[in-house]
Length: 483
Ligand code: NAD
View (cartoon, rainbow, N blue to C red):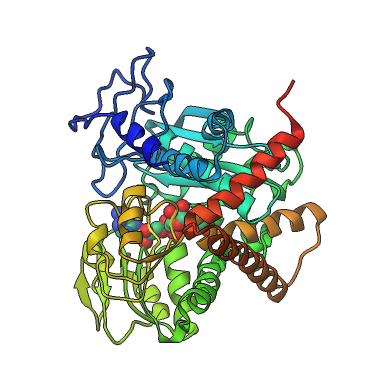
């Protein structure tokens, strides 16, 4: 394996000098010709992965190292797949099959703004794998959404659903927009038009969206309503994460944050012989995932000493009360300025001396540049893809335990699955039942991951990936390749 990795490093793309995007290029980074891949680096936001060239000419060699240039989320996802494919000794044909998304849709659509002007938006929807069932994955509204990012997130969703034993493949979608800049009417109009544009791709038997960064239960209600209007009858199962009043499930809003807490608590006990109530916690990102994880951990006795959002962080060595911080953030629009805490930057938060660090914002936050400064004993990946493969290696060498995203934050998709099942059967369960079933699913998966680490000596991420990929490969082999 070391030899193959060395070969892959020799084949790494060379460092690309940052340059502004050319209007001649496609917004998703695609080029018209079949040129050799040239990473196109756009620094829209220094904290995010840059966008890269469409991977049309797929690299011949597996990419297992991405330190030479700042990798896109899709390159990271592929590097992770390549690493596990080697550990599993997956054959090359299956590797090629798994790393390509099944289908991708790009839409450019108009929205009439409050001013009366028309503004064009670009959106995406990607289905990665359809082997285990319909696809499932969030919709993101963010200024730096790209097709590459959707591909990566769709791939991670495939692994997550397979690890959780859900009858789904992975999908992801998004619109390039800062939702905070839109009025409610504009946001509704954008959502209805985007839903209409991607309606050929979604449906209860085909692809079921859910909330992600920048989207919420209200937006899911508009998606459900738009799809239903086109059908002529209500189709609640087309989307999950809806409000309870329109077919949503009890417990979905906090599911990801509570699920993270269940997984952390059990991992601490089993791997470190430590109790959650003895732990200090720092959380990057105070949106749906971060704020509910903070609250669930606080309620179970952990000391949450720092939280942050895009504007910065706050720290109090004696612990913060996440409920009060949330109330403050709802009123002021940010956690920054919360009384009784000192201001810190997002970078400082990642480097705090805490037991547990929960990155719960965006991808690519812990990289080869800052991994060696991380002092946490455990990193629990609340966000999808917050740690790059190089950072992963550095952290493992330091003895940091990483609970991988596809296990750690899977509570959201598990309860989304319960929502879909309840919508289809038109019979709803109570909140206690949903919590109990979610905890059981997460802890079953954790048990299998830990058993695999013990049996094979793999780290938790590789173990989780190998279980998930093994299930998809088995299904591919049982189904056969059509025709
Ligand atoms: P959200 O929009 O509710 O919150 C995102 C938070 O991150 C906000 O507090 C925002 O200010 C902060 N943030 C954004 N950019 C940042 C930056 N550069 N530095 C620091 N903070 C930043 O989104 P969410 O639903 O909480 O999702 C967060 C992450 O969790 C994403 O990676 C998402 O894919 C993943 N995830 C979400 C769910 C879910 O159920 N919502 C489930 C699984 C995984």
